[in-house]
Amino acid sequence: MSDTSPKRALITGITGQDGSYLAELLLSKGYEVHGVIRRASTFNTSRIDHLYNDPHLAGTKLFLHYGDLSDGTRLVTLLDSVKPHEVYNLAAQSHVRVSFDEPEFTGNTTGLGSIRLLEAIRMIGLDCRYYQASSSEMFGATPPPQNEETAFYPRSPYGAAKLYSYWVTRNYREGYGMFAVNGILFNHESPRRGETFVTRKITRAVARIQAGKQDTLYMGNLDAVRDWGYAPEYVEAMWRMLQVEEPDDYVVSTGTDYTVKDFLKFSFEHAGMDWQKYVKFDERYLRPTEVDALVGDSTRAQTKLDWIPKVMTPELARIMVDADIEALAAEGTHWIDKVVTK
Ligand code: NDP
Ligand code: GDR
Image 1 (spheres, rainbow, N blue to C red):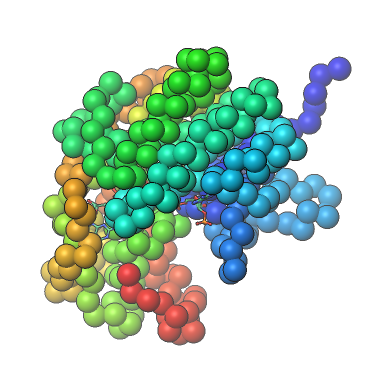
Image 2: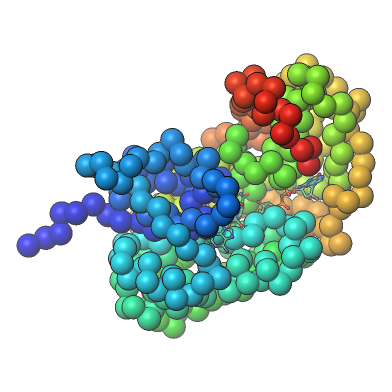
């Protein structure tokens, strides 16, 4: 008899920006979605609360489990009980600047976390497809355009940890025949982006400055070039990578190049303001080694996965500014008082 139960997916990092959009996508496709969350003393599920139902109710499709990429035995028990068909490893200490402050922790989570997960899959003999959230930061100092054949040259503990995860994913594919793939994603943003990444820091500041709640935005290197795409489109590419016949690695990017200054301009102008009146330099936002320019060539994903980027950086900035203005108005002063400007 054939198995008619829905496909099961396990997502690490489900509480993050990408995890929340991926959970939405998979639920809309009829998957049963299992998310790994970290126990915290405060709630950390705000990005997925709208998807969550009481598991006692019939028809529930989203299930959350405590776990941590630093806890290998937990990954074994979790995978053994859920038995997912697809595993998406999105969990990481994902902030490049923070990785210079916490290099060992970043290596443990962003690097060793993936081998713990791959080993757990191998140890229990689970037949599943595995997605690794690799990053354009692995290219680091190698000039653009960057594609799947470009030499890696990471410039941070984060980039180096991601490169380790990239190679072990390939190694498990080649050594054990696992369907294990790397999505090498360039920067992708959304209204759910963490508040300390540069795009969201800017769009939140625009909303707060316009509302008279902030007067200065302190920033680091404004000349960095990035290829910023729209996160909901990028999680679609992740899913597509696991649906094709043969496992492979793919660059996902828009192919456009804008500076941080450009993003400031798009965002402030959308709210009718001149960014130069509000932005000041603060060296604390510089990195010991910077990645000057990342611009991806996603030809392979476009041809083999039929994945085409649609939202480009100027529109992305407008979407994020609008969302932050709306969120500020909806939250009211109680929320504003709690905000610490990052
Ligand atoms: P976020 O920082 O928004 O989310 C990271 C997630 O990882 C959160 O759910 C976080 O949980 C979880 N996490 C962190 N440490 C651990 C741990 N030790 N054990 C279990 N879970 C943990 O990242 P994004 O959603 O932006 O990115 C998703 C992935 O893609 C990351 O691996 C990132 O490095 C990578 N990536 C991102 C790109 C981007 O532009 N956004 C580009 C390329 C790669 P909690 O909520 O509890 O903190
Ligand atoms: P990045 O994203 O390092 O590319 O990593 P981030 O938004 O942090 O920085 C982008 C560029 O902006 C410059 N910058 C600042 N950055 C921050 N955060 N705050 C500032 O005040 C500031 N001023 C200038 C940075 O120096 C940098 O050049 C992101 C993360 O999502 C990673 O997890 C992911 O792998 C890569 O994108 C692809």
